[in-house]
Length: 314
Image 1 (tube, rainbow, N blue to C red):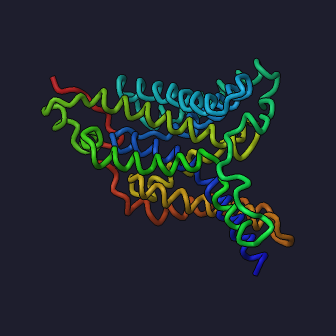
Image 2 (cartoon, rainbow, N blue to C red; image 1 turned 90 degrees about the vertical axis):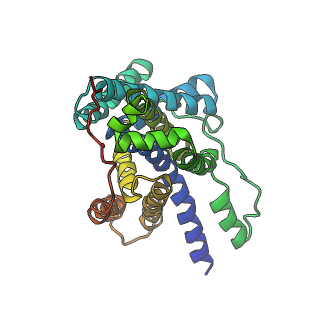
């Protein structure tokens, strides 16, 4: 019984840790997709955020400044995507693919310049995002260890759940959210009502990049201690899958990210078990991602104007 409780606590902790960066990126994807711009460049934006957050935290010693700068790096690549797709009318899928190649390429080049390696220098504990409630629970008891596993989590995890509530409020309870959703459904009607569709979509794509950058920074400033070229691989696409799974809604994206986070947590526990092939265990999150796309992509209603460049009526 004790082993079961301990294992379950570890799975819950890992679920929250792995779901956090996915959820930041998924919330960002919701902004872009709902406004009518397809953003598959989330992976590149997360990579930029992961590198920038780690480097800034290393040189300044401030994890929060690093976290913020990680978001700003993602927003920069979001701006590039917005310029290409919103202002210049480029194909959104191709532009997103370019961001996924450009982001990692630039940060690896910068890593070589700064550290003479493709990896950054490992962060110290003081340079990483701190944990909340660490040491509060009595870990000498089974219940205390369980509570410590679940609640003694990184501050970024608590922030992302607050962000879900904030994004939901923005989407459904504010004028900005109403106009954003309208731009994704009927941009021409929005223009006749005096809504600047170009500015609205541009802002949403930049917000998308900022949140994706925060997600990338979470990866290297909580789960690991340094940036590596493989730090983000696949997570941006899993976040997009979570958005599709959640039908382009922030509350749905939350459920999708928790599902994928749980799969990663299960991978951690099963990976420590003897007799189980590690390669098969590592496939769990990706297999679940593919299954989710197969089962839910047809059931998710994409915004009517999604992926269609907006051209002002003359």
